Amino acid sequence: MAENALNENALEQLRLGLARFELVSSPVPSVSPFFASNSHRFFARIGPSIASPAMKKLEHYSVQKVTGDGRCLFRALVKGMAFNKGISLNPREERDDADELRMAVKEIMCDSSGERQRYEEALVAITVDESLKRYCQRIQRPDFWGGESELLVLSKLCGQPIIVYIPEHEHTRGGWSSGFIPIAEYGSEFCKGSMKRKPRKVVRLLYSGKNHYDLLV
Image (tube, rainbow, N blue to C red; front, side, top):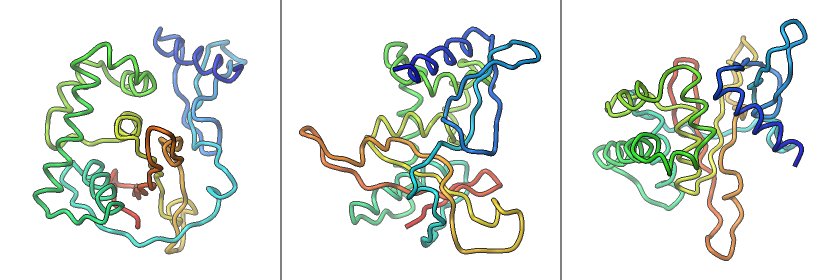
């Protein structure tokens, strides 16, 4: 309960313009509030989520390349969800399904204030860097690049657990390795089944240093 109160406080401070994000490299809770000693301003520290022991291990998967046309996050996600169901999408289906996901995010974040309030973390992530109006203009374009905000929405909307990885060599800044390091997790609650839904398999996305997403299987 105390942690939830701190997170809510951080989000409120960010909405009011009294706080800013600080990106850090060491693991911290996804929203870790603290006060800066030199200015007494409230900050929200953003870094890789504190992971379970299993998440800390170097992992190995095969990379399925995704077309880099601006839709890569959405393409990788629909490709992964289809793969988990044993379905193979042709290029047109992949593109059309990716655009449907993008427009689903647009409808939630831009067309319905009631729906938007259910995705508060995504709203905060969007409005840190730009106005919601500007975001809603950009997301309508097919070459819109998805990222953190869209993953926050889609994991919840689709009931889909998602883990994002980076190549090990990008983390170590040298050499080469075929391993991957998890850096963010969304929708982990959907890994377990319930009375109303079946457990969902994780979709694993590979994020490379050039703002591109591929699929790991």
